[in-house]
Amino acid sequence: IKILLLLLFLVFDVQKSYIHHSLQYIYTASSGIKSFPEFVAVGLVDGTEVMYYDSNIKKAIPKQDWMRRVTEAEPKYWDFQTHELSRTQMSFINSVHIFQNMYGCEMDDEYREAEGWESFGYDGEDFIAFDLITERWSAPVSQALITKNKWDNDKMKVAEIKYYITQTCPDWLKKYLKYGKISLLRTDVPLLFLLQKSSSSPISCLATGFYPNRAEIFWRKDGVEIHEDVNKGEILPNNDGTFQMSVNLDLSSISSDDWMKYECVFQLSGLKEDLVTKLETEKIRTNRGGKPIMMDPSWWPGGRTDSQRGAGRRPASGPGRSADRTGKSTIASGSGRPGSVSGHREAAERAYVELWEADKAEVSFQFQLLIWEMAKGQFHQIFHYLQDI
Image 1 (cartoon, rainbow, N blue to C red):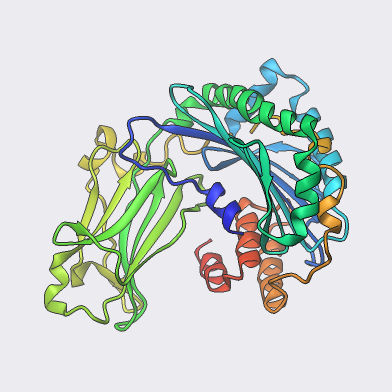
Image 2: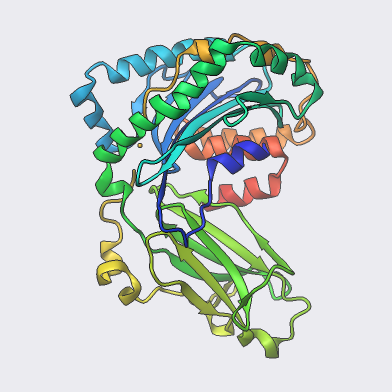
């Protein structure tokens, strides 16, 4: 789902003087996927999972140690979360295929005016989204027009969403930033690799282990950023709370004599210097072996060594809204149109189940990402990602 993925991994211009922070909640309801919970909810701060709930465990749990501090001021916090998400679960599950809701807010570190969003997706397509500026809903598909007209005329619902985005959400985001400031305001510098599957494959420049997720990676030639023959991937989470991203360069039309003109550049918010590596044969890792490109420790903030990089990893969620905010099943009952992923569903389900069986305690945040990728039909990315995690 294009809107959900774009909102999930907001990539900010790392040259801006202000650092942005975000709080967001993502709900996914699905049916017909064996051994997979019908309803999963996650809360994220700055793109990292901090709260988790699903219809199997029926309990909201913290995903970061510092999130436990929230009960110092709100003793019933986790009980409240469990109660509200149980109600929301009932409103979402109604013979849907894949139904998703995402909402949240973002603001800079000066706590100026907040921005926010709310969007819904159904069976692999954007369905309806709220525009905070116009205070109206946009419907990219005709099946959502009835819902759009109904919600546009529900002034109480519009006012409630606006208040949540501009007041409630930013207030909780400030609290979480206070609780988790040591983790949330850290900078983890990544390892950078040049990878190639075979001599005829594109060169992939992979940055992994970085934090925060406000980063950029690109190829340039003779000092100038290039876009031709370049394919950049999304920012994806690692299991340890850091992130990874890559950018591919097609070499089929590039002479080996010109390779030294090309270099991969990685930029990270909070890191003053760009990380740059030239395209050199001895640096490329392939199936036949090769060398990882290790970052010089002197480039890291404070000159940290590799053994110190793990310190203080990980970031976290706040009260989501009650089930009444999403309504009953206006969308879930929908038009009954077929899902856009039906042709690939069985193969994707097998991959999910295999990974799910390895740890039935809960569905990881990676599973949510895989569901969204399934909804988009990008199965080549799914299976590549499964190999990575």
